[in-house]
Image 1 (cartoon, helix red, strand yellow):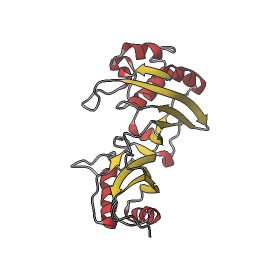
Image 2 (tube, one colour):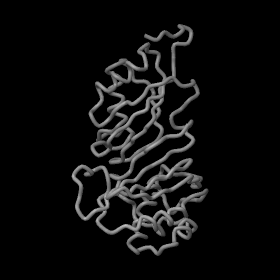
Image 3 (tube, one colour):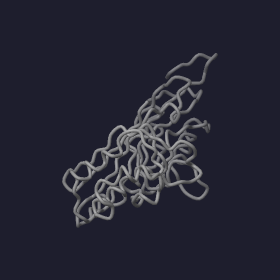
Image 4 (cartoon, rainbow, N blue to C red):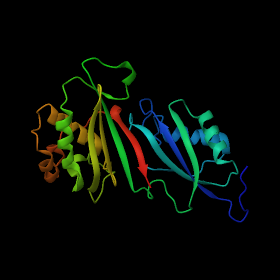
Length: 254
């Protein structure tokens, strides 16, 4: 068991978790729906009998998944990191798991210390649905020109005002400029993945990017239009918002 000086009992922990979002309603606690934060806090209370202030790295919406989601919290409980990980996985539901627990500096904050994120959007591109992808990928029956979509996606790379690719609500205020580091569209069999990393993302930004690319694929938006859509700074210029089921928070960079 780890021991901590009595003069400074608090320690700051970073917990890396993963979850399926198809039966959960995003990260943040809600009054009328089960969320990841709720089941996380309930499991933690069973172990340390406290409800510390936990900090999530991002808001994720209902139906969105996470291969890597980060939570920071300060506790004084002497439980070891390894025991905390195992105990959390005992009390969490099957669609949420703690992958790692580690000590971090006192000033570390899961959200504000984040330098960027990578998202993956999965599309099952086949005329026949895959029951194992139900709720885990968008079933898209039309032919997809993946090479063309990958070329089109490069217009997103760089620092731009992404107002056209944001659902405006009270969450979004002020600066809409984000720096997209890379955007790849790749195929492996029937599975097509859209992978994008940036220093930050606006509300529904990735889903609108993907929906716009799919609209280009279907010819509803002409090829070569994305730069102009970005420049318009108008949500109505972009394509539809792709469904939540295909979106994964894949990596968080610190």
